[in-house]
Length: 178
Image (tube, rainbow, N blue to C red; front, side, top):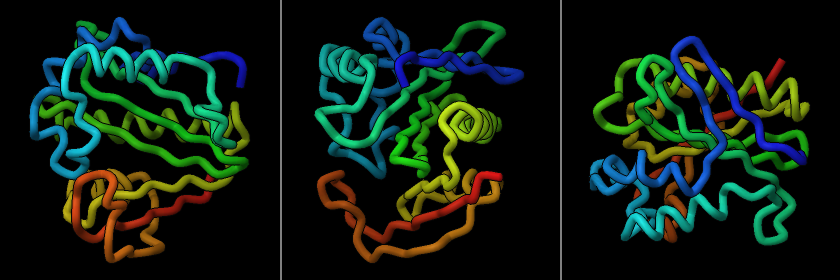
């Protein structure tokens, strides 16, 4: 994957992350509500967020890992407002997805819409065959999105990765990309 891809949907422009996006997303990402399930990942300052986006803006693999990443800022087409983030991690033919929607924009279908496009892109451009997503068992919003996209729960982990700052069960979902 030598280039970063912009994606689009009916309502969203999905732009490859750049450090300049920190200004758009910081007002939302400094909100504690965003970090309920991953408190250890919360950037402490806008500069830390800018540095994270700088790392994410370079072609992966990241730190020599065998995976490759793509990260997007999801912005509404009609007014350019950032509504969330999307991430794809490619490990061979397996795709791992992650997403977040900023609190003022939740429950409007943006997560489903952006993830449908990520799944399409991964299948067509990267030949991904299986998609995986993992979430806190208490994260009813993410569970609803995964199930609406056709993912099936394949595993329950009694303990999430403790490095994320959340203690509790984790669900693993899987989807065959056809």
